[in-house]
Length: 629
Ligand code: FUL
Image (cartoon, rainbow, N blue to C red):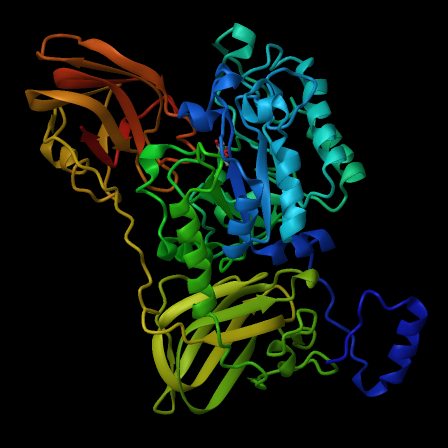
């Protein structure tokens, strides 16, 4: 396939064009919005890792308040090369490190604060994990990037204009001294409460304007022009609207410019993008390999399985997003062996499933062809920059493969040539059975394609497969088609994710039996909603209890989320009980995973959970599952 390549100097290009008179066909015009070249490069990375590590790791927290003692940060066997090697074996192309999480603790010796790694016992205060990881990345061929939390629960001046120079200085330091980064990650979370230099209070900021992002973007463009900027609404890439690692099957790489900001109330729509958007802001699907983002020993048996990770891959990369998989580095300073084994196995499974492209090198029969180099064969070569295109005005088209012998098939890969925009709005997939075209059986809609669409369909054995594109925003530009047989287990489309919770038996005082059943049926799709701000759990007998667990409502978006709580116990019904624990369910809105409250064992028959603050003020509390141990 002949094509223009970017390295060809202009004169050579002119000569080349003149030499190919018969194939001189103009490419289709771009359909706006289009990505910047760096966004295309970023999207091609497909899977990359997150590392959450810091004081939280040692203090069993998800959101440190900013008051944990730096001396508790003491990983004895920390080895960034182990992280890098593991990530490479798991197919990751890069890694984003939480250089500073919400607690304000810096994993590098940032001079603007003493709340940094130099005050920890790690390497007797001489360590610098940003440096160590960035060196390991260069050594093992991974790209490197940083996460820097704008919210800082440590700093006394957080919330005032005086905090901003401090934040900008951190950013400048990270972006000046550690080489190229592929992404800069700005977390949109801001839960209010913090230590704030000892003030211990809640602070709110104007999330749209406080940090002055336009100024930050200017700084980034001058220091690291190749870096893609992540924030809830972009500009480089967007949050996918959940922390479960998947995008919608319908997923546009655009947003309406200026509409989405950190804290944007309609964030669930980020899973799909804005079909009428005018800015290219593709989705990044972030998720942790464990329920929490930071390491907690009690989650050692809750690591996502290779099959669950594979399922997420199909619903992130295969839904026109990227897959950002988090590894909560453990207290030794290593990626835990279970996480490592599962991630590597996931990568092997993926490679196995998509090993042999049954249509590689084949020439599909197409209903319309633009000509020149924009021909059907361009879809089955392995050159990203060649593509089949239809003539101007033709926005539908069939791609048909005929095999010499019947083939077993259950996976399909489609790619649009996104440098010219994202176009396809609807398509169908059919196979030939006794001379007739029948639809393949799928569990999701076939609408958008974008950078990449992967479909898992029920196995067919056939000598014909046809993709019919039925609606698009412009002439079609398809650069890759792959058809695969994923093997014997190919039809296990769904992986049951069950909260494995043992519990004492209990009843819920004042809750109708039918409702209460939803909290014990071990089905995370049903939710028990409780009016008011108190949940009273009756164990029937006095027992020794030491923990309370609940899975919040799992619908999209979750309803009835409790932000702050007070948990009391008592032995008789009339008693208000004594408080055993109070606190926050950190990050519950973005990541409504199993919430656990552990306390010193106590004799009790009743547990009373009081919601002292809800994420959304009105409405009942929601519990998909409850357990008491
Ligand atoms: C969220 C944070 O609040 C979590 O702690 C985590 O860092 C996740 C990636 O982003 O907004």
